[in-house]
Amino acid sequence: MGENFIRDPHTGHQTTGHEWNGIIELNTPVPRVIYFFLAITVIFAVGYWILMPTWPIGTTYTKGLLGDDVRADVTESVKQAALQRAPWASQIESKSFAEIEKDSALMNVVRETGRTLFGDNCAACHGREAKGNKGYPNLTTQSWLWGGSPEAIAETIRVGINSTHPDTRSSQMPAFGRDGMLQRPDIDKVVAFIRSLSHPNDKTIAADQATAGKEVFAANCASCHGEDAKGNQEMGAPDLTDAFWIYGGDVQSITNTVWGGRNGHMPTWEGRLTDLDRKILALYIADLRSEKP
Ligand code: HEC
Ligand code: HEC
Image 1 (cartoon, rainbow, N blue to C red):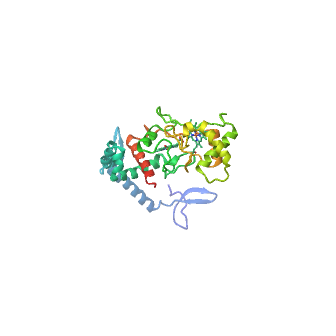
Image 2 (image 1 turned 90 degrees about the horizontal axis):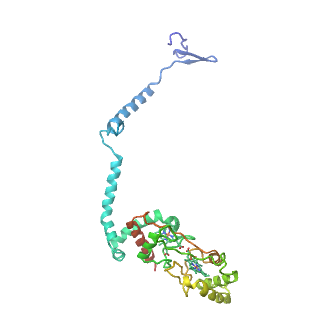
Image 3 (image 1 turned 135 degrees about the horizontal axis):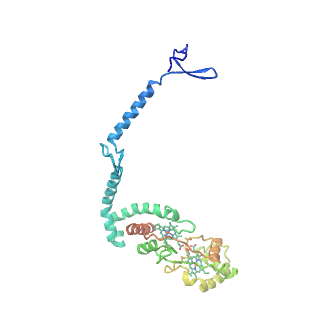
């Protein structure tokens, strides 16, 4: 082509013969630098094919001179991690809770690994520091629903509370108001009584209300929460005299609890976490509490 078209008088280049409204296209060569980069990419690609795993051939692939294999790297690092874990993992698996609690090296592992496990699985509900949220108990206090020994905690983690596990711990705070078991005046009395137990200095609580509430409590609540209202770990019934509340200790929250009932759900972790991980978590939580005065 070319020869038949006009040569551009300014640049000396031939034109392509394409013309748009009097504008004629120059036939300039592709700049050298483009060929240069094209050549580099081709050389890089060929080099990569030779050195690295690239082309599929049937059921396998070209392995490349470097034999780089990410899967092998992962397998190797998993093996390394398991090797590092093995000595303490088997000790935690075989020793009793009491033995582990006396072994400071193992407890260091428990604190480190337990914190990660807790952050990954439990913090969404109980908070990263295990101090709970409204509806989710604080796990760092002396106040326990089902018991704070590592054995009791391990069982709670295994079966859950009101969970889908066949052996689940089940707890049910009845809805005294909604289900018509108590009339509103009696609810107000029993709430005043409970509030006076945990907040003896609350001047807004009328003494005669609280005294009247004591009888309502004995008749309706003591079977689960105990005569002294200090709770019953057989039934997961909380201590109502202390400073720790799952659903709130102000008059309105307590009234809501007694009126509408409560039915907290804690998932079962059997099948979702290994025996070892659950044992570590039980020790971790028991240890959080024991750091308290
Ligand atoms: C979906 C939210 C949720 C998650 C996730 C969760 N929990 Fe719970 N957990 C609860 C609730 C709610 C309760 C209290 C149930 C009740 O009120 O009866 C509870 C109670 C507990 C108790 C009983 C405390 C006591 O006083 O006896 C322990 C121990 C516990 N959780 C540990 C854990 C651990 C360990 C994990 C992580 C493996 C975890 N929880 C994950 C919601 C959760
Ligand atoms: C059948 C046993 C049972 C009876 C009877 C019962 N409770 Fe409860 N109560 C529970 C359980 C179990 C919980 C914990 C529920 C949960 O966390 O999901 C609870 C929780 C509570 C809470 C919430 C505590 C917190 O930390 O927020 C209050 C308040 C309470 N009960 C008051 C009462 C009063 C008042 C009565 C009597 C009118 C009563 N309960 C009767 C079992 C019972």
